Amino acid sequence: MAKKIEAYTAQDQSGILLNANESTANLSMEIRKEISEAMLTLDFNRYPDNSQKEILEAYAKVMKLKSNQLLAGNGSDAMLGLLIGTFLGKGKSLYTFDPDFSMYDYYASAYEAGIEKFTLSFDGTLDLDAFIAEGKKKNVSLVMFSNPNNPTGICLSITKIKKLIEAFAPVPVVVDEAYFEFSNETSALSLINDYDNLYVTRTLSKAYCIAGVRLGFLAASKENMKVLRELSVPYSVNRVSMKIGEIVLSHTSEIQFQIEETKKKRDAMYEAVKGFRSLHFYPSQANFLHGYCNQKEQLLKMFEKEKIVIRNYAGKKTFRITIGSEEENQKVISVLKKYEEECV
Image (cartoon, rainbow, N blue to C red):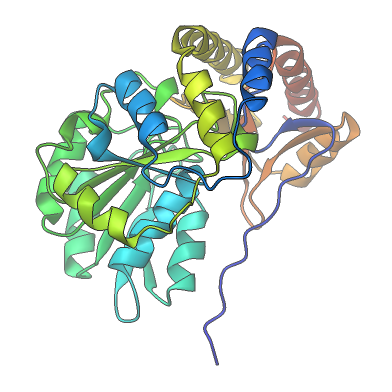
């Protein structure tokens, strides 16, 4: 009998959606008009450019990389799946954090690989030496983790990332930087020329406001990328997504302004709730806050009454709240204050 694959839970799509870490703001009308005009000239009858030349050049320019160090995919999830499929299989194991992004489990189980997890402290802090020692003891085949971590929001420094890469070499280390634009650390992208076992994934779904477009990237040394291009599915990114990506990337300064606004709102939200006694939150370097409480079902009912959807972790005391608009954040704070008054 085939091994059961861990199911991925679809997200709710009604109410105030603060469960999937999407941008609460749509693209500006100016960018959307530019996209609309570009669609009129697109050759829908032709297959997309399998070399991904224009989108890779656009992303390389923004990230200060070379296009031959990049590969685009149907969201960064597809890039994570490609790496897991390349390095794992029966008898091999993935090493990650608990908690971390659920799609790692999904892809690893699809390839019948084992999954080893290192439990983070409740506040998300990491004993790096213990993590390394445990992974080496278990002889893991692939190390993969999100940075900033999803869902805790903690972000490892570049010094710790380097130590980790060097300790596990030659085992591949994948740093998933889906939320990195919201952090204050140095990206692991700065290390891809220095380490043969380093792979970094990024996405335009979060900071760049186009989760609906499904466009992500994988970065590695040009030597590693030659191998991965041969293994990737042809025409994996459609013409529409690539063109939208190019246009959005040409407006990076506008996007950066939105990122800074989100960071300000996140920090303001944390300041508003960090002193609560019945709810516990920790600082975050992503576009969300992670928290826990002892009467979570009551909290969820309060949010449901206000038609606010947050991320619930079944069987745990924890939850995650995406940073929304100013109005949405105030509604969230009101619910949290009400819970505090009733449950303290």
